[in-house]
Length: 347
Image: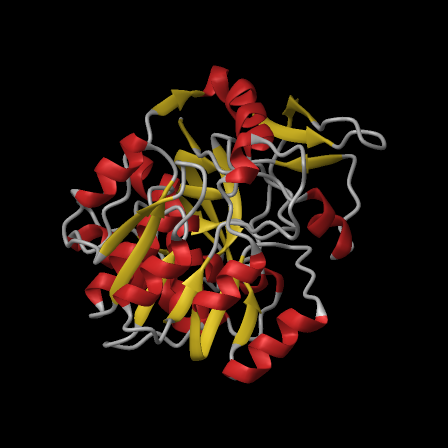
């Protein structure tokens, strides 16, 4: 049986993705479920995080968002039985690659997949759904009547945030990174209150947000990265990111800023402005759910709610075109290089 693995580069070299032979143990663990994988989502690998939590491997399994059918269960498994359709996210320390035909996974990382929800759809969108749910419910304590600003709303993560917020009666503002994305966001249903273009050079983020909120600012901001300082030579992608001061400026009193920026640095004036607004900054790391078992029940409740909302149409992810297994290596290299892209492999 073959699986996709990452051979971490030496020093600053790019990681290499290789197909490796792998095998499963003959005896199934007590709480382990053996699953035939139907689809696997590919997301960028955070090699630094993997090293920080003490995982030292020459070959790191790739592909963790999986959907499939239960083949066999351990003697103490109580949630599933053979032929159940399941979906879940493999933990960081899983020895299995999600791109294997058959994998072993602890039952506490899986939930039932609704019958009418396709394996490709749920495998491609599960992580972004988890990130959106964690950002809005767990960290920002979203409630009806709040105002939310989502950066890059046309991204797969941004779209999940918008749809989840609209469902709960939140007023949503968002930014667009291209004319095509701007048109897409304006045509969304349920509709957002305002789409702010940031691809035209100088951004009107502050005046537009203040106008839309009556000068009060927004209650919640979800970013997809920020600029820490103005630089002479910036990539096209970096130029579209908001400056940290712009984000703090549009935040309202008691607001929550949920950031995906791993190395955020706040200067004393930034902290002073946050203090004056009694606002908070939270770092979004969705890996904490599988890296710590202290809130496993809550995590499973979130996964179950996400797949149910996908099944009923509350969350409607942009469909990802599934690639065959023989293209998985190239697809993963693209995902790792561009960081914000997604790919789904159909097995």
